[in-house]
Image (cartoon, rainbow over all chains, first blue to last red; front, side, top):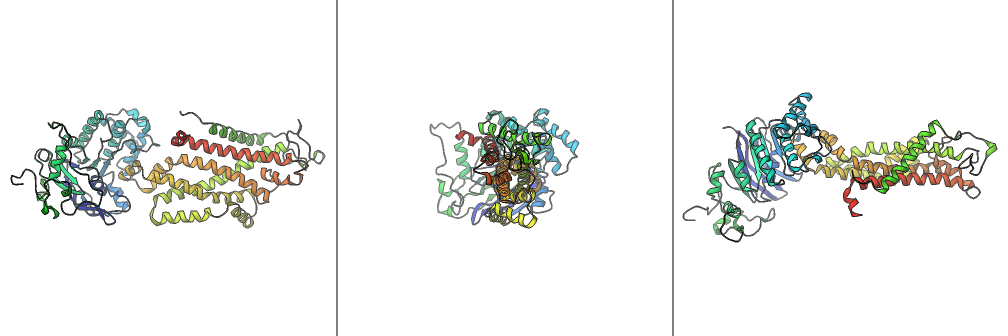
Amino acid sequence: MSDVLSVRGLSVSVRDTALVSGVDLTVGAGERVGLIGESGSGKSLTALSILGLLPEDVRADGSVRLDGVDHELVGADERRMSRVRGRDIAMVFQEPMTALNPTMRIGDQLTEAMLIHKTLAKPAARAAAADLLDRVQLPAETLRAYPHQLSGGQRQRVVLALALANDPALLICDEPTTALDVTVQALVLDLIVRGVMDRSSALLFITHDLAVVATVCERVLVMYGGRVVEAGPVSEVFTRPRHRYTEGLLAASDLETTSRRLTTIPGNVPPAGRFPSGCVFRTRCANATALCEELPAWTGSETRGFACHHPAGDADA
Amino acid sequence: MRRLNPSLIAGGVIVAVIVAMALVSFVWTPYDATLVTPSSRLLKPSWSHWFGTDKFGRDVFSQIMVGSRTTLFVGVVAVGVAAVIGVPLGILAAMVRRWPGEAIMRANDLLLAFPALLLAIMFGAVFGASTLTAMIAIGIASVPSFARVIRSGALQVMRSEYVLAARAAGRQPFPIAVRHVLPNVTSLITVQASVSFAIAVLAEAALSFLGYGTPPPTPSWGRMLQESQEFLFSAPRLAIFPGLAIAIAVLGFNLLGDGLRDRFDPKLEDRR
């Protein structure tokens, strides 16, 4: 299986504050990879740096390579990046209410997406726009609608149709269903999965919802404090977590707990730049020892591994 | 449809009346506005001369009617110049942040500090006094306020998710400016235009009063005011009618601007 996206040692920083450190990540063709973590763990920054859309004063280092693009994406100039964006990588944002231009009809926004990269001529693009809407189960009349005439779920489907317009090799979804009703969530998730499967595109799915990851993704990376702390197939990570943070995250979302109190991870996520040295989780970890002041090495392979001195599930832990 | 607010209605009606008056003056006025009739000098208002006549025997009402053309012409030119320069400048300043954007805004501040009337008088001295040069000068002097307002609106649009989404779709900066930023600041442009219109009308009156605006014989409300000076005590109506016309026009455009702003910005409406 060829790798569509390959991220090596990606770090993101603002002035001297590190926000994301040493993220390694690969997504193969047709693979669906989840990126989970609490707010402020660096998930969205990772996604934005893949697209080169970080805010002006935020810096990315490391390497991001995309299959079929012959240059490094980190630090590439706007001209080269704009050719990649929307054609090779597309993104679905969290907030469907603001992700569409309020002054343009849906049809114009869809055709524009295809005309930017000249993948189709104008008449063909109009026909293709109707087809795209049909694939996200919206009627053709939607073409003439303005965004304010649609509901949140309908808009997010339009955003998805926009993202899939040029058959991107990689689709990045940043919490695409967080702002939607639970009933609409399932439909949108289903459309996302079907959309990438039809095109055998790779999917990088960012969320903090473990249940969503379990339904959508095959592989998952757990981020905390700007680092990937654990990675592996969804079935394994969710049933036999090794990193103490993953363990806590799963316990907190366990609905079948017998205890009357909600299980939580003690403490709060520290603000950016205030994460402890060594293991980023050690200040909130019940198993932390003096050893944790040293940065734990990655144990295992990139596809299944963790960074913890006292992993869960070890007999002698 | 939201309810129309009173200032929008009042402003709209006043502006509509002025526009109608200007249009009608092309085909009909009670008398030829520039016709000098020595036999009927300084007549009091009557059925035959609604607003009376001036020192040359010209019908004041006809002059007011024809003068409204000058007023509208002045506003259109000044606002046009200000918008054509100010809007792209504001959007540009918002899109290229860092130092070029800052440089644009500081140059803007410099121009803002320069009095509009002084600039217009300077232009008049260099290029000769005419309505057009005066208004180009007033337009240039109005550029900074346009640029400032549009920049703040554009900054907000640039931070919106649909612009981020457009960039994520591979849109280049220029199409983003034209298709995404510009349509979303049109409400700001409209509001700023009606406010600048009022300022331009007032500036033209002031310049004509000083002799740097509309040269005779083209009727202009400002010049009518100036010509009425010597009769301020004997025939104050000669100053009152054009003065009222100017005041109502300025009020009309300001009300229209206020009304439009309230309508485009629902948050502001709720607060009242």
